[in-house]
Image 1 (cartoon, rainbow, N blue to C red):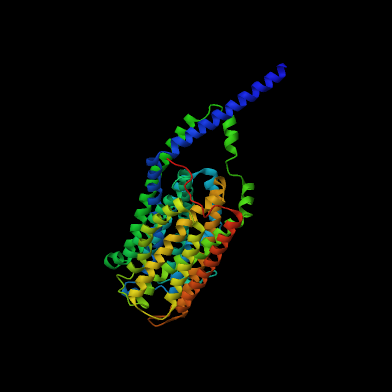
Image 2 (spheres, rainbow, N blue to C red):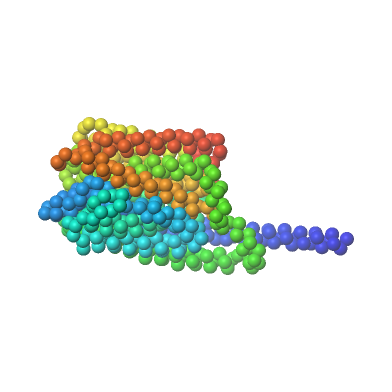
Length: 487
């Protein structure tokens, strides 16, 4: 009888403990997640840091026409092939040294504070190295690089610095994504990611639109120096976020249950384990998201790398203003990405949005490949491409946490970014070689390169359609609204 009473008493205490633990954790969640000012401040800080990285990532793209001028005319004498090598170098270390996998594991094991600061330091060092290569290295000497042939030493050193920048840039991307998921899960996550993407697009737009103007007025290195300064400010901003995040951790610990050993055992179930990666790798939805990211961004970002010179060569736009037309694309997405994100939060239809965005991207690339040199047509196509540039990312990035558990998120993002970096590394090199072959004197034929981009876009359409079909089969919830809780 006594043993029965004791057993019941133990069960009651265990039940009360579980109730109190759940109650305290709910209180912790309420303390953090319902502080709207806190999460929106966090979003502003990490978005600014990411925007600084995007400025550096695209600041050289609209300067292609200046880099390819003769040294006597104020240029560096680069070829289209050498520019393609530089543009693709951002992914060299991420692909060949598997740095994105390392970054994802560091993120899941060390947390967002350590990984974010590390990524900002790498971005700052890499962008400073690019500036040093352009300003301190003569463009005349050449060297042989295995797999790339003979290229200018200046190109090789700038590409090396850009490759180091790329490690931090991609690591920062997966860190910021995890920060947003951490603070906005169950709330306005797609809107938050849309705003974060919009800030990143602002960085792209500023780089594309104003780098040629600044370079023509104050010299080629000046926009690169501005990029270095922006990344430095981004590092300072992220350090401030770290203090805020640390204060919130202290607040969480103060409210947590005093029975720490049992709490830690329960929390361990939410930590990353290498065996958990198998669940992600076996998930077909994860691989479709990854392939869609590969095709979509491999068609879009390398196109932007060469778009400024395309406006000059094919559409006859003035060199000083040519960067403003590709800048229409990110400027459009600054407004539309948060709007599409808010729609996805409230109404859903994320997988359908990915299909529509892929179709629009491919159609625009096909029209660009057709004969014609109307600058008005180019502006219109860029506006349409801006809609596609907003539609798909607003739905794609919030879809990842619906397919992948939180404890695997950092590593999963790193795999996605790794596969994406393969395309971002190889496609610019390929396009640069194609354009070098299709250049006769001052005339450049963009037909073949644009057809390549359109074929890649077709791959995005097929993958997005398969993802929509898989969502209906596996019920990932990609078509469901993201908002599941109320303030």
